[in-house]
Length: 218
Length: 43
Image 1 (spheres, each protein chain N blue to C red):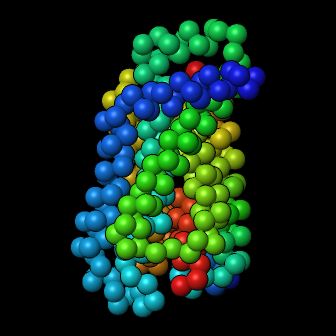
Image 2 (cartoon, helix red, strand yellow):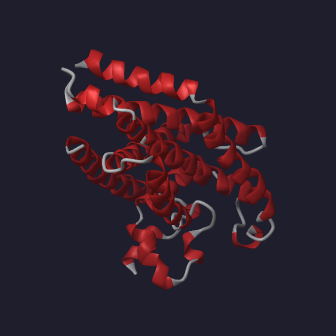
């Protein structure tokens, strides 16, 4: 079983390595958010955050955003496999479905964590500091977010037969979740009728946890 | 009131918030993994 999982996992990792465009765009987008939004809104939010600068506030949210985008997009490999008939071949092979699922999930989680690590290094290079004692908590939080959204991506990918439909639905679903998670601004700034959406959003808890671990000693 | 006291946005930081958020995140993860596994089993 371990060998089966590893074979599927390895295939996912090789595909990521070969898909340079996917790898670069999923890193560049959050990095642009960090640079553009981080600098544009720095002064606007300065009065509401007395003990922390906006770039430091934004970084844990951007890390979670990177995880979410990479995790859900990793589901596209399943749609791709279905379109080219590989999914059918692997499903009729002697490997159990559980092994395929775990291998794909671990592949997606590894890709997301690697990209978040790159964004964290870029943020540090931009002068953002974080509490090193919170790193284990951050890894745990990001792992849980990655597992959740890889699963969500796989759930949708299992139903879709074309890549365009999958991408549109995932964007439609993911973007409101990110905007309502407090990744870019404190959620208390939202009106009270939106607070229920914030509380029901799984990402809110991920972003908040990451922020707490990130700023532990500030 | 209790909810607001408990969940008041993070930068004030207390350990109870972390535990609450992690448990909520864990529950959501389990639900999403179950949905993902179910959908994939029907693929």
